[in-house]
Length: 351
Image (cartoon, rainbow, N blue to C red):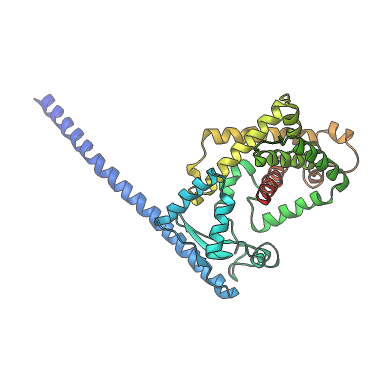
């Protein structure tokens, strides 16, 4: 009888435990959701207070809000993914600024930000008022102007560079990049002329052609020459139908794919972490390995002994300031993003 009683008791305890699990899980979910909501609310309140203090201190006007139809501007997020896929980004942005004016405030997925194309605002943020503090008691120069979630969004590929940094680190990177503009310009123009000839030769006669693809190869070739002192010659390989440079082609494709991940992550704001995963990390790793090899070669005693006395690449100029491989890689990738993508898009949009 004692054994039967123990069995019955154990069965009752098991039933009690099983029946309490859903209640416990529900309570835990409610508590966790409440904590997240409170943290989000507190963050919003602090941000609004900081914005108000800055506006009062500098006499700023209230920017016009960006209009949207769905909660959290989900309609704009969906439109952004669709329009980018259709390659109509420029037209879309132009339409938005025509409706809202040169400066407006967005509130997308619960995150506020200010967009501007106004020259005076850009000059103030990047130059004349760069060291402005968000409040008198702040110890962080440039704290009034932040990039939001850009750093964790772009860092897996770009690391710590001018596109992911702000305030004092950003200024330091800008100072490090200045040697790029003092390189041998005659040699640069010669290379640009050579790649331009290959660009023209790659355009078929009497056929429709996607010039943006060729422009991206053109700026990739010129930028790699500026960075490493030698070009990847992707346009030349296209013209000659030469696929022998498999390593360079693999790097170029990995850089393109990983950038696509970055741009899609960037459209989600603070929810950037929803896009990524194993494939993103693999593509970033391919890019990093390629750049690391170039950096190690440039840092080797053999290279330093054999190279010409004058600085003939951005990497050479940067090595005179630091020999940290991680810093060198990050700065090179940030400049490559600027030299390749922004220039190629500018050429495409101009046409």
